[in-house]
Length: 219
Length: 87
Image (cartoon, rainbow over all chains, first blue to last red; front, side, top):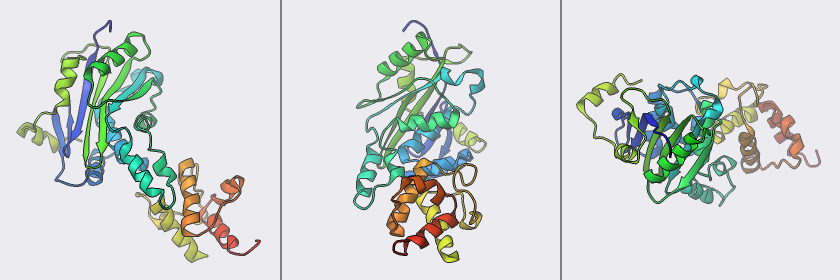
């Protein structure tokens, strides 16, 4: 990589909690995964009927992107300037298993659509009209070295001006999403897009009393 | 026919996960695709599965799809006509 880039926002969703730039926005009582995803969707207040049709992995990635981009002005860029590079460990295995079960009777076309992990990227891009470079990679665990290197290269060669990147993993009851919005422009207070910084963010902070207070007026 | 259309509306909502839509909000002649209910091509495939699974009716000619899936009434008419041999 040739240049320094910056993390303009980040979002973490795990353990029934949603963090935005390190602040706890929402924490649900213990519930199953679909129940948590639905309550997070309702809290965000988005009106997007297609959300209900998505599989759990796509819902998780879509929600994380929705929070990540809540203060982002996409009109400053061309649709082809904004890309998405995601990764996880289980690919689309959660939907694959459900699809496998469904074919015992009659295969569900709507479920079949989600038997590819990059559909998460598709759902984010359709929602926000992004048309830039995108890719979905499978690693055993979050690979900060690779993500920083790959995304920085896309920005270096002018393929992208902005990139959403990170980790969106879901299998059964286990899930975790950590997304970063990476931009070229340096602004005060922004963290450099480095391996150390994204590794630090990937471990979410414990909710603070201030964060819980912020939660009440989050959206 | 009215009972079949009412049943179809409930089935469509359940099968297509239209969680923000109530059966009474779907008009008998309201277009289901495009500017109507806003269904897409995957929904069309799910409707074919619904007809086959729930109503035991097969769509043998895909080119007839747009005409059959135009509204709840046209789907109901297709189901009714398909019950008559050689109709």
